[in-house]
Amino acid sequence: MNTETFVVPFSEGVEETEHPFKKRIMEFLCVLEGFKIKFKNLHWSASNKAIHTQIDATLDIINKYEDVIAEEYQGVFANFEPNFLKAIEVMINEPKAALKALMANVKSFYFSIPEDFDYVGIKGNCESFISELNIQLYLYNLINNKSNIDL
Image (tube, rainbow, N blue to C red; front, side, top):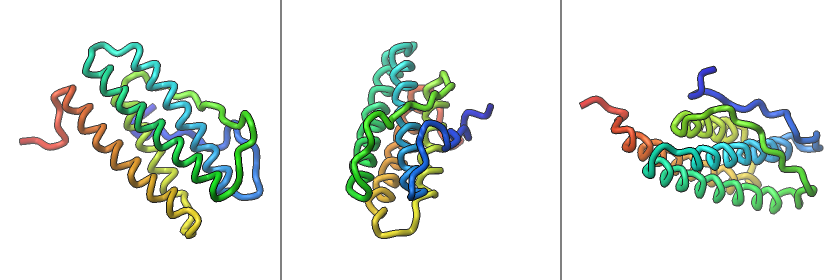
């Protein structure tokens, strides 16, 4: 499996709703929950303090945007049903590869957002989420002394 393009299939764990994007948001939140668990496991098994600390920063970002997107959902649609959130398991065991997979999932979700005024906040927050993940990728590269450019 190519971990850089790994995108979780959206259809597991969430019941059908009357609005397709409503289901898509709930699925995406389940994916983010899976990535939170994955990064928490990677955090606890980190091989050095730099990676341990960087994973902490990544977890903070995931938590922030999961919460913002969930609360925006509730502003547009309604409150969630209890117990809807079920983490989708992420089977990647290297922090940078997991970050790239997370980025691919956020981008996939972003491109699925309808062009509707009700969703401009979700779209804007996804753009900020992607921006912060790009910074995380840069910082993971610094830990590994790698760059995206050749000098």
